[in-house]
Amino acid sequence: MAKILDGNKREAISEAASLTKRGGVVAFPTETVYGLGADAFNPPAVAKVFKLKNRPRFDPLIVHISDPSQVESLCLPPGKEARALMEHFWPGPLTLVLPKRPEVPDIVTSGLKSVAVRLPSHPVARALIQEAQCPIAAPSANPFGYLSPTTAQHVEAQLGDRIDIILDGGPCQVGVESTIVAFGEGEVLVLRPGGIPVEEIERVVGKVKIATAAPKQPQSPGQLPRHYSPRTTLKILTNGETGYYSAEEGTGLKAGLLAFRGPVEGNFAMVRVLSPSGDLEEAAANLFTALHQLDSAGLDIILAEAVPEQGIGRAIMDRLRRASK
Ligand code: TXA
Ligand code: MG
Image (tube, rainbow, N blue to C red):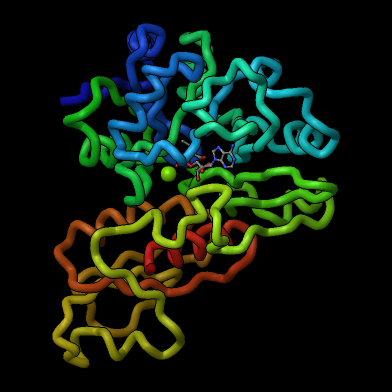
């Protein structure tokens, strides 16, 4: 079983960093979700990450750095727009896809000529990367396709029997994964909506193109139609459906409700309210914990209220749509 170590303790960072340097795998907190990390320049270590979470090798990993100067070891010199985005949003929940240096192992990028790079703001993540003295390749610390973990306990429940160390940094403040941005011919492309709202990115680089939900050939497997999913069937409610599914109406289904702000009408087996005050950032921070709880309650169906599709609400709706496929 994995040891859960207090990520705020120096000894814990040393132990996790030393395991990383020796080619091991460590689960660690970031401001978005927990990651499952290995030395990005050690291919056998990175191979373990794929194996541990049953991730197909065609799905490339994000490389995490602790200082902007490390970008040079991974990518060719970034263009004007990429530099502007780094200055505005790093450290933070923004991942940039940039042309890679040949030294970056193919296993990290699934053979692509680009590499995804992110400088997280979480102090425990940064301390780990700094002490390990290497960029850390890390996907979210969940079995492939399943709900992302936003607490050390989520990681323990899903992967605890397969990994050695989980650094505990408390619940993730942002709660949804980073926004992934790529650069095409004269255009900025959002591959995955996430912690940094599209509106804020547009304030820095002008109009962006948002990748369609299910392109024929996903550039980012986070774009796969079914992803971030609970085991229980999830359905996004359209107006007026709540009453139909509540126990009072007697559909025979044991239904749980993921409400945006409440108040909740109807009689459900379990209810989780994402933000009583209707705050989208609070809702994002609570999203995966609420889904984990609903998914382990033995329900027949999880009903989810839609949230306004603005700011971080776009990332919430993206995750709910993929969870409902
Ligand atoms: O917030 C996050 O981004 C979290 C934390 C741990 O940093 N990480 C995360 O990793 O969400 P993961 O592996 O669950 O999702 C990474 C996404 C995948 O959909 C992958 O396809 C995409 O990033 N990606 C990685 N490298 C890419 C590349 N070179 N081009 C396009 N997409 C890439
Ligand atoms: Mg993931």
